Every structure is written in structure tokens, then in C-alpha cells.
Amino acid sequence: METQAKKFSLKLKPEPVWISAADPLFRDTELRVFDPEEIEGFEFMIRPAGRGEIRKAIEAYTSTVAGSNGDEQEKFDNEGFVRERLRRILVDWRGLYDEAGNPIECNEKTRSELMDAYPQLRQAILNAGNWAMVSGSNRLGGIEKNLESSPGGSTDDSGT
Image (tube, rainbow, N blue to C red; front, side):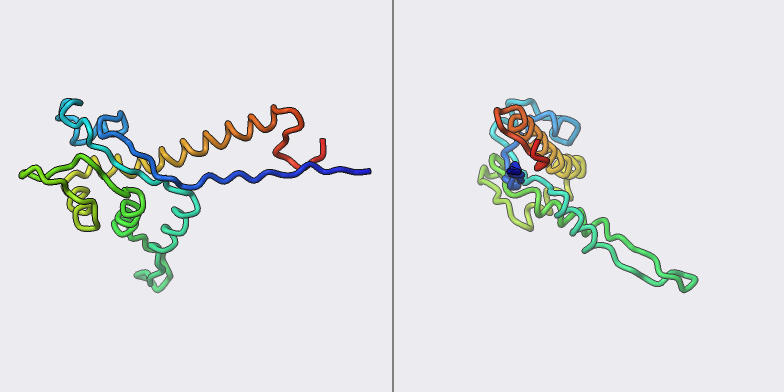
């Protein structure tokens, strides 16, 4: 009688995470001029950047154009790509207020204004999306390792 172990397929959902503006991810941005106490409570909700999603976005912002000598060349809209990535990655924020002390809502307009005004922060937000994805992959690796080391647990279907 031949038995075959079940193959497990673990996929993490791209769940957003809150990251404090005082986190080292944002150390080298325009926020560095503030004392950690001044930005306490200022947080970003970051959605992990999935590899498949990034691939699709790259394809969406890549077009074929006629070159100067009649050949076809690929043209990449980097600004459009970055804006789309920011729209997907930066889900929300809290602790950001205007001069009158009113909370600033995270929406398309305010997100664009913040990211245009603070280019280093913009890059840090993109990096945070990548960090969140890698962090999720590391969690997945740990789960697979635990399955392999558990009695009778396996992530392959070799039957051994």
C-alpha cells in the first residue's frame, strides 16, 4: 500500500500593519528633525507589497513605443508606477494634524500632497511595503520549518 503525504500550501494574506513614524524605517527621512516624543502616535498603516502585484504593476506601466530608428522600445512610466505603489501600500495614517489641530484624513489628495512634499518619506513608505512583504515571507519560512520538524509533519509530497 502506497501512501502519499499531503502537500501544504501556505499563503499569507497581505494584511496591513501599523508602523510608527519613530520606527528606524523612517530614520533617514524628513521626520528625523523631530524628537521621538514629538511624533509619538504618528503611524502609517502599510500594506505589504506582494511580488505578483508588483509584477502586474510593472506590466501596467510599461508600454512599447516606436524608437528613433523605427524599432520598438519599451518605455516605463516610473512616476505612474510609484504613485500606484504608494496608493496600494499607504493605506492610512493616524496622528497627523493640520495647523489648527484637526486630524488630516488619508485620501488620494492628502497622500499625494504628503508624498510630493517629503520625497525621502515617500521612498521610506515604499521600502516599508517591501519590508512588510519580506517580514511576511520570514514568518512563512518559520511556519514551514515548524511543520517539517513536527512529528509526521511535512511540506513536501515525496512520501518520505
